[in-house]
Length: 632
Ligand code: COA
Ligand code: AMP
Image (cartoon, rainbow, N blue to C red; front, side, top):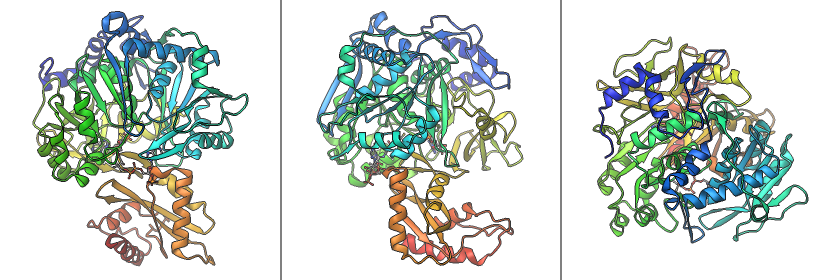
């Protein structure tokens, strides 16, 4: 373990003296101009960190390491079982590749503050593109490669990028998915398409480039001169990452440069116990927040080697894939979603594959993204023999709110708990009127302001949505959207979302958005989409639809059409497979669909019918149909 400090002392200090605490953490990074203003306020009272500090995130993550003697150390290992390729980049090589691609973007007119949308599979060029954007002081918005054209178009229209960077294809196990047709369609759908599209051609599938707009990555790089880092203020945005909210319109979470770098640098040592030179593997995708924070920025800011894995936990080629990669690259800490381990456990219940690999270097397994169910926790701990650390965070915070500080003062874990609040996060459990609840009682989880560095600074182009959605429910607090409780020892237990966001295989999706899509079908009068528990993926969405009067369509045919519609609009990643036709939906007398009640009924939980219900018989009808579904 690295530096040993006492958790309570570290935590208390972070809350009692946030400026002193974070000034010290900031001093560990190479600023162009070190900040003197540590914590200050925007005009509307929201907090900002390190406002007068000048820096560049790509400089801190790459150039600084090259300048201080880490140039020949490995920065990035790419391991791709789906293509059979591996590639390694030293810090110097990665810095040079990033500077070169930054030159390409600069030649296309990208400068400070301009947006660049990146829609790419898990290839090193995705990381290179992100860092190149950061190098120019521009703002990247990475869109997960599993999203369909419509989702990409919505994000393009909100971010209004100058350039879009993509690849010719992604690879799902053995299936090659051409990206260019999706991109072309998204650009057609978009009201604000970028004027340039840079395409990385992969050997598995070559894309057809169209006229003036498209540039070939390789040719463009060959013709470009490297670009230098552009200094930015700590408060300037580094990226926008869209995440699902309760409505159909995704929220563009904005992350600044300075607070982000300080928080991630601190977390690498404190939460993950990582030191420079050690290998960190976040088995996620660069399209999600885990990928942003812990495939790209965190490990590189900390001088570690990061692993980029283009494969699955199973089927590439088997349930031993994670253990093979961890052993082969001497990974010290592996971070994945519980779903990944559930998939491994399902195929290899006795953990036989673990015996095939030397996991001597692997010290800790971290999980987040969804609830870690106790059976998976027990299985993983027992079969790997490693500590399993559950930690809780969100796209909005960008790093862990609760966890076990493995680099400072590891505490005993408790199944079902993400342990204790991380320094900087003042976690409160509140009742509906904003009063704190005692230990053991479940309520809304809120964070007392100010949020520590690294958390979202606003919603892109919609500051009102940021204030209304997060800061207004409980004045003086950020509302997380999760419910849960603390036990007598202060351990935090996350019990799930209190809104209409669901978590499918660690992917955050909006049931509200799915409802909007279903409601657009000509046969559908009204609908509700709810998340039901699933053994493998945690939750799966199902639709309950009421037909318009006079519509005559077989329920199976409608289901097929609705499933295809969600796949077309959101993508296969939504895992929307069931839509039931129901005669009525339980509603309040004021006409609000009782979604929580539906969730409880669907999951076979105890429920009580609220007195505000309009027609109590509607619950029994739906319950009957949902029972049928569970029995299938
Ligand atoms: N591009 C295109 N399609 C994609 C995609 C991508 N990047 N990622 C997933 N999909 C598709 C899949 O091919 C699948 O399509 P199908 O319905 O035609 O088969 C669908 O979306 C659902 O994908 P997924 O949820 O990944 O299911 P799966 O059955 O292929 O794999 C697991 C199951 C458990 C192995 C997988 O869900 C997994 O690895 N989960 C962990 C995810 C994770 O790391 N999340 C953490 C984010 S922090
Ligand atoms: P995302 O923004 O995609 O990272 O999703 C964040 C949501 O995932 C949180 O609001 C939680 O609902 C859920 N989540 C993340 N980590 C955990 C965890 N360790 N335990 C339970 N739920 C989690």
